[in-house]
Figure (cartoon, rainbow, N blue to C red):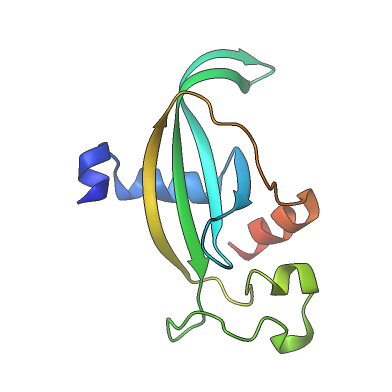
Length: 121
């Protein structure tokens, strides 16, 4: 219902998750929030600099059975990644929304974590 309300397709949400412009910690524990600008006004070197609207998606990583990861240190993984419960490629999308305007950046995820996330997805 929410995707229909905001006029978003499944493919658009997947594109936001696979190629985010910005990644942040979500409001839920172990959640990841990603954003892509929409209605871009100005670009520099192929990257958006100014836009009127953002598309956000918040998701959690889950194991093969679909259960959310409860033990963050399982498997001896990097502790920063373990805090997000990353071990498999399956995700559970919690919510998606459109934000009118430009939001301020808060609690960004470090670049090395984002790079490792992209290699998993």
